[in-house]
Length: 322
Ligand code: PMV
Image (cartoon, helix red, strand yellow):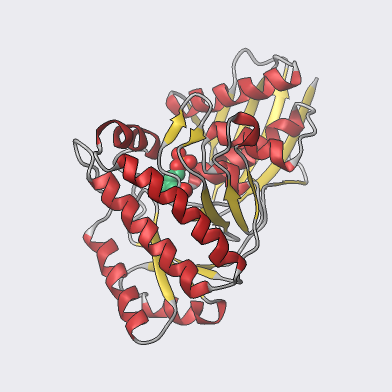
């Protein structure tokens, strides 16, 4: 007997970053964070539970994957199997419209889609909060891609209270400025661990980011897009300063990233509301008002390839094509 379900999820871009875990096994973050789920670069995942399989199978864009990616997915499916009391293995088929591993949050959309599809395929009926907690175990930032639009992920006291939920925010857009589509040199998981172990600045990052999140939630609730942008850019540059302070150092920013940061500063000097944020990779995301997004994208066309994104839907089931 087989049971299957298909889900779609989108990446999210954090405006207050998650960088560091206080409990790696449970994927509990050192601080809370806040993000916008995008309406571009969807991940579509079908999970087929099959009693005839001796082991889980993972297919990404039609290619069978083994090793670390399969191990991560199989460990995640173990959590779902435990919740469902069902030890059958599954086939996971994923298609990703986001460049995998280039710092555009493919693990967020990936594990959010997997959490929704796998829990349905194994017959679980989880609340949005429990889906967010489950997605968190696959990849921390995936907890936020369960949520539509702007989400706050609470650090929480433990597993039960560390989940993402929607939060009031101004209308905004993001211009994704891709300068490179290569796989990043070191995964965010490994880089986070090295940061906590070796950076003398890590304790300051944790206390500053916790305070920053409170200011950001207030700025969002006040619909003050300029303040939201200022807080976001400062937080992102602090995260990259932190990452660069590891031993051995890690640097995700390239000359091409800095060229985009310079352009965004110039836009601001000309009176346009535009602020930069950057995840664990070289690509820059420009936060702006929806009415300015196309003009900003056009002005960056010679230094990056651009896509305009707006707030998108949380991870959800779609008609099954298994
Ligand atoms: O969830 P992970 O392990 O992919 O970590 C995400 C880290 C950043 O994207 C850099 C920041 C964030 O909050 O999304």
